[in-house]
Image (cartoon, rainbow, N blue to C red):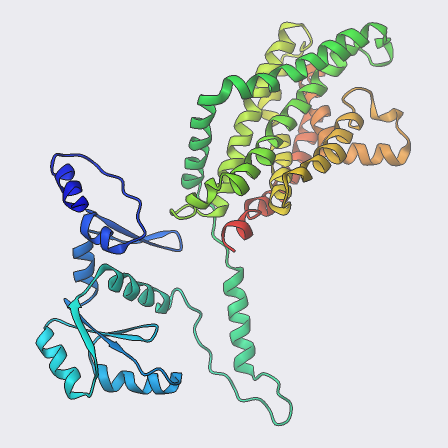
Length: 428
């Protein structure tokens, strides 16, 4: 009765979305069935057309003998002969285009109790699964194994060669697709349009408040002669680099972790052609987008206050993208390694906070002890701070190019591990 009602609704032009675990309902009610394997669409058709293209029209179910797997295997060829067959547990399904021919042949082969019925969607999906699993593209070729040597029990050369091939197969990783990553980026942008009023304001105000409190407030008591400019002019470009870092890293830590572990958004994405590296690349692209927006707005505020005198100041916004990529990659790698969201306290407290305090944002690094100074000047944030000052304050393009090259090189080193950081979670 319910199926008849749904048929009536469909006949009026309504589109129905049905959630069910019963393939009988799918076969009876759905207009199209799509079969996915390894995230790829393999078949898409009307249920009856899919069944007809996969198996003959009728199936006969037979119960195989219970004792021992050897007895069951010996019984299958005798009963099925050359007909298409499918093993499902202790049942043998034999397929044919005529019920009479099927039952006559099985009776002659000595088959016992049997049930003849039309081929179902479940039969077709079982058959497709077996065929896809047996295709050469999905399985490593079998290498004949040499027998073990006498009294050694060691593997032969064939076993070792097969093991090496399987190891190479396991190491094969999908190459990220920019077109698919763009879909992930677009999804993040769509969500951002709905929540930007509550998410974008804190990231804009934090560096401005820091500039007002430290650069302008504390700067009143700081002699700028040792710095070559006012303290506010010294701090402003440093906070620009911090803004680029925070804008990129926050997106790939808490936000990605929630989608990965709690909302399970990526579990749905990988059932489509999207692979984990595509997701990682899309999230990195979105992190850089936010980095670009935050640094652009903050630089506009700094320029309005008169703390960006160099004509090269607008170049600082795109030039700081490699800095954002470095920290986005580091944050994504950390996200792929942690199991609990509380672990980010260590990342922010023991990594980002010391970098912010010691990388030359608020005072020159030359005042630090030698060992600590060497560590601080090797940090990516220090190169981002110096790059920002070279473009915003002094207009020193050669110095800016040196720091930019260092950041680009480091970002390329971290990009590979970051792209595959979600692989083990989504393709375990």
